Image 1 (spheres, rainbow, N blue to C red):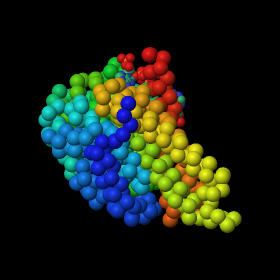
Image 2: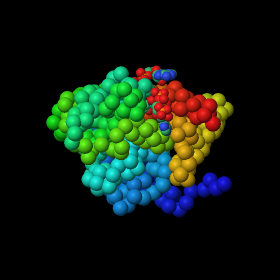
Image 3: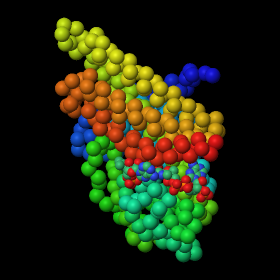
Image 4: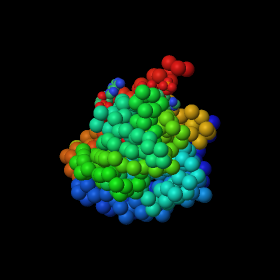
Length: 380
Ligand code: CAA
Ligand code: FAD
């Protein structure tokens, strides 16, 4: 068993760390406050190869492994979880979904642009009445011979107002349940495709979250991904990889908060000494570090499973469940270590605490991860 990173891994981690420090950090408070989408930064992340990390270079990607992907996600998330969720959705939901399940024509037309960051992608599964209960899709895609007609509503869509390409899951044959669901590629500006107002959120405020409305949107048949009825499996399989990305995001949020808390505790004095010399604070730091390392092992194991070609449905659910809990709990501790300063925006930890919460909700809530894990255990 080898826990060391390769030179290539260290290089990509350092590149992401440098980018996060130099480019993401300066405007992060303002973007959070004003809910500003980091448009230019997304372009730069595309130039650095972060928008298609695992995509084959023949489609414009960086051709790296899942370990590299989580290293990048962790570093970006230490500073700006809004930017990292855009990266995560683009990489592990949209690019992965297209590269694994799309046909050659779809890859040439869409993946090549998504992998370089020229296009931004969105993944549209959730609906007002089908969130956790994802098989209950109300959006319909009716087969009209050479095209489908899509009607319905998707909500909570990350990059919803900014994306160029949308992977949309819809019900074609209600009687077939989850086997009557399909996945489609939609483009911005298609007739009948409307983007609703932006959500005003607790956290990841720099990312763009919208409701989408489809009114008789005509989608050519060649835009269906995979065989007829394969859309739910497509969504589930794609989400397993997405959960590795969000687990890495949670890890980064926790690690970022820990690093700030450690630094602050070595500078701030109370009762004649730096606060890290008070055992209550020192033990908090010890607990934080142990929890974050434990989360890191689960995240890395899941990425390793993916790289090895092992099934990672369960390990990704475990990584996301645990890392998101660690992110929530340890960001609260980081705020506590900062005292009053933890409560104001300049010290960053309050934002990390707000951002942490979403990692327990999206790409399957913590309760849903437990369903996935327990079903796998029982099946075994
Ligand atoms: N691999 C293979 N097959 C799978 C599978 C998997 N991982 N998961 C499900 N299936 C199959 C099942 O075997 C079943 O097939 P059969 O009917 O042939 O037996 C079929 O799919 C239906 O599955 P279930 O019976 O397990 O379905 P369910 O209704 O009980 O729901 C669930 C399962 C795991 C709860 C699923 O609905 C789920 O994951 N819900 C959460 C949705 C989610 O994660 N949404 C995230 C949206 S994207 C997002 O959030 C992005 C972002 O924020 C940035
Ligand atoms: P519900 O499913 O209504 O759940 C409510 C509560 O009930 C939760 O605590 C849940 O865990 C619990 N619950 C539900 N069913 C069960 C059960 N069987 N057993 C135990 N507990 C249960 N979706 C996309 O498709 N694409 C995106 O890009 C995207 N981005 C998002 C960005 C943000 C900021 C947010 C907030 C959400 C985003 N989502 C996205 C949606 C997200 O995936 C859903 O919010 C999530 O899956 C939960 O669905 P829900 O909100 O409908 O909650």
